Image (cartoon, rainbow, N blue to C red; front, side, top):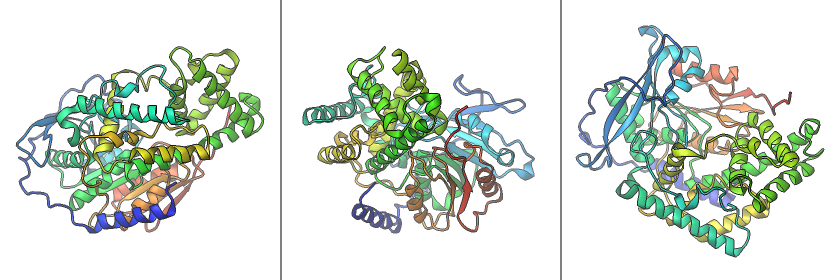
Length: 497
């Protein structure tokens, strides 16, 4: 975690950001967006159950909102209309699945299907691909310094020579993004995206932006509230990204993953009769390390240590994936096969390449970059905590070699915005709950809904928890935050059948 002295400095800086007035939004910054023309959606957008249907549209926005007469790009939007009566309608609910880099176009359908009935009856659910993502001027960073090589190089440097190689790969990744994105590089940012969101509001004819953001979507929502506090409506921020620089956030996450992996080892040991990985956490850890060491020495079908760490990173974030990870470890130890360790095709194909490119570009456009010497110092400190960490989520390290660094970080939150509802899992390793507590201070009057005894990422309309879903739905439909913070009882660690 961030040391206390540095954390204090961060809080002071964040307070200054809240107190510093944002630049005024020009009254005629750009021509009002034309009315949206909704029609058929691309095949990547699933159809909702009948009688509902999804429709899609495109919206032209400036690449650089400070130069509205310059080059424009097109955003892709999707919509599933509210299913209730006109009297029940509360407006449009813009949704974002996270990232940076997550495609929101199909999310209007997939997330809406999980929302409580009252929310579905009250809101048109609007998905969109943020700029640089999916079908909205997608970013392309080419080979990204070898990120997509299979098998990839071991992502954990352990000596000065491999540390230098690691930094070189970051430099190459930054150079590839600069070559791929070219002049668009500094404009694929959160601050430009929140202005796109306001253009979507105008094009929909809505007075306020109601918003449901998950993970990075919480950062996006807090940035919208900072820029457009008086246009902010009801806002649910689920699995909150802390208000740190992106690199600091990545470091916090990497340390939380160590704690989560220790929980996984203990859990697998408790179910030794099923997984046969060891009767205590130390033996389970040794089995895990044996798998990784052997894959580092002899990759199997393009699956080496980098691919292994990606699979572990994905599995640790959601406890329902733990059985699959444990079974995959056992299958490798028994038969030398890695099929059970491959989570899916999440790191293959053009969609994942766009995700990884947009992720780095947005993070590096949002604020200050770490110095290379700090990256190495943090890596060494993390390895002192655990010699074999999982560094897959350290995307903002690339920013050390980025071009077009912003002069300031993205402002988050506003005293002038209405209270929001923040939602967090008590032991989420991907967005640790400390971030929710800190963001809550930047959104006065906001309430925090915590799912206790839970260890997964993504809570509202995700974990199937009636307490959480009822409280969040009551806020979205009724418009009032709870009188105090809310705690709900979670499911605990998963059972094994």
